[in-house]
Length: 310
Ligand code: BDR
Ligand code: CA
Image (cartoon, rainbow, N blue to C red):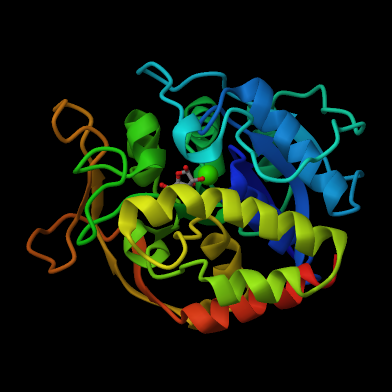
């Protein structure tokens, strides 16, 4: 199985991504590292453990990482995710322990202990933990198989400012470190995730699983969609983070191209904007495979099938 580390700030869509990974035998989740993002770290690490227990996998290792971005103050998104970050279902307080090791140490230690090209990183929140690891131990860059991340946007614009997507906006300096690291990056921007809509029939298919996980996921999605539906006027909201895990399972669901991605870290107006050289008008190196298209029906079919395994 492909060895992955999920770096996350749950978040309803993060929760669905974690469940998709834990329900997929092709993936070996070595650890889940929490970061401050949608809500503060004390909640994201707890939410990650709640999800592992919901999945019936309390043996999963969950680590706490950075409490704040590298340079800027933390910006959270309770207006999207609710006060807990995981509003919707009534999930019990987790009993499984939080690992004592710091998330950044775990990421470095795991990459150094495995063969080159063995470990894939799956960041679903601000890139603070990944950047801290790269800054502390730059040798990990060449050992990473791939960094498949949710973040950024280009033709679609931003969702937190007109120019920026939330994950990159919260820690643009960290995103800059990651994109300049030389590690292979695959990026799932809003251009993809805004096509992965949680329509009523897609949520119904998940509820119809008739399992504890299916019910909880339907409730998570219903809470999450309430915000987005109002905002975007669509049937359902975009399901961002699970696109990362789906790419590992079925890359053919996605289409994109390799190009240069740079992050704005100076201007307040466009802070966190991902400047994507889609038309190759510069000589800047192609540092990311940027996705733009998704087979949304195939994606939800895969998600529902894997949730059924939990
Ligand atoms: C991203 O921001 C968070 O609110 C979601 O969990 C997702 O990772 C979308 O912009
Ligand atoms: Ca997230």
